[in-house]
Image (tube, rainbow, N blue to C red; front, side, top):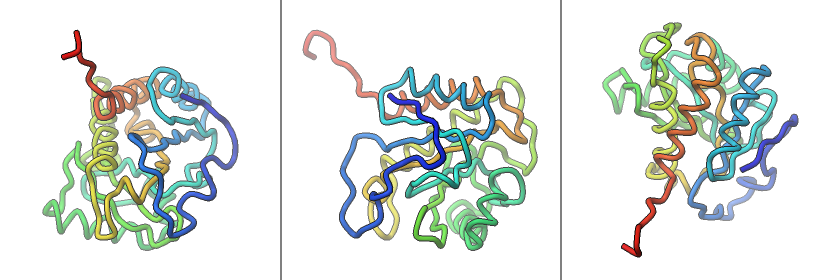
Length: 213
């Protein structure tokens, strides 16, 4: 459990060759924030859950990772917030997301589901689209659980998902994640952090046996 700040986070040698990545029980998760409130909230995740979790104070685009998370809308439009940043950085990715949403989900990706698509770039090679809102620009209610559902879907995608090239967990060593719903959605950073931590614990915690059973 580690919190770090910097301008370039992650392992530069990972994913840069054809060698298989180490098989870990969890991914390396880099939680990204461009503002102090979210960065402070993210440190609570790194401090309270088991796993290879880091905090990066800066743009998600600065992180050395094989996959980035898009806190999307259900229709795959990438016109605002961090999604617009992704669309400018990876010109093919919005069409890839929309095509996957249409092909596998009939044009609307439900909250709590994900699609993983190529970015069209060498690194990060993959984008995991995990909607935090149904409609673009939607303001989320204070009691929303959408960050939890989105994070849980991302972690399940890594654990159980596959693409034509193989298992996601074999292709992705590091995931870079921005705030989920903390921009246009209006979710408080502390709320987002608590829900991401809860999702991580649900997906990756090993049930303990009692009395040897």
